[in-house]
Image (cartoon, rainbow, N blue to C red; front, top):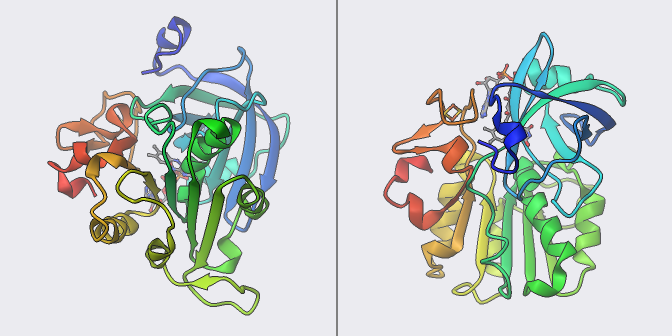
Length: 280
Ligand SMILES: Cc1cc2nc3c(=O)[nH]c(=O)nc-3n(C[C@H](O)[C@H](O)[C@H](O)COP(=O)(O)OP(=O)(O)OC[C@H]3O[C@@H](n4cnc5c(N)ncnc54)[C@H](O)[C@@H]3O)c2cc1C
Ligand code: FES
């Protein structure tokens, strides 16, 4: 449940109205939306998500892609996959949506990571949740050590936020390394899955914070690769996506043994999950 103000806690199922300020198609399947809340700006933390609804269609959990340091509203990125997300792709500036949240108590370790190197390992749409943390770090750059962003994308046409990745790469002590699963005549960079980039990391793997988000299949292979470098499990953060309904710990849809992804996550420390390996 939202902890930022009592107003939001009055009815956990009641959406708040928001206005679409910008709607921009990033590629064939990903739509960027910037929303402003009609009842005033919301506080949130990197890693939290919102339930966004369209009247008469339904509701979908979506990660907040913006950083709390951004004052232009809530940014989200929606992959077209079914009923609700299809309808969201039809949204235009000026349209209204419902928003519940911000949801999730398990968030990115913005304080614990201070003074340390951070490695972001992103697969496909996994860049979206990580972006909130990355942008927070970029806006508070002197508080953190070296930043390395690894981005793996299936093919050339699925890439998005290319300009932003390029801008981050120009930052002080920041490295961005991209790879595509498949070769493409237009692509001159690395080819192979994101785990092939891990050997290129120039950070002290035993002290760095590692933040991972991507499709379910990616976690197993990334964790196996990190095990070779003896990365302590308490330095690894995983953003897990599970099927969700209520988003507030009531329906049980997102249960991972004794944990609820919606209220205990969606960001988990790997050392907290080690007792529930089927979660990954
Ligand atoms: C915490 C959280 C954060 C998320 N953040 C984002 C985000 O930032 N951007 C984004 O595009 N999506 C995100 N998702 C996924 C998004 O919520 C689903 O894609 C959406 O709910 C699908 O709704 P729909 O009505 O369009 O599709 P439906 O018609 O419900 O489903 C279409 C197909 O997609 C499958 N599907 C539906 N939901 C999921 C899911 N969660 N995981 C895997 N398969 C699913 C269904 O089984 C079905 O095959 C997030 C999910 C969670 C739980
Ligand atoms: S989505 Fe209902 S308990 Fe998590």
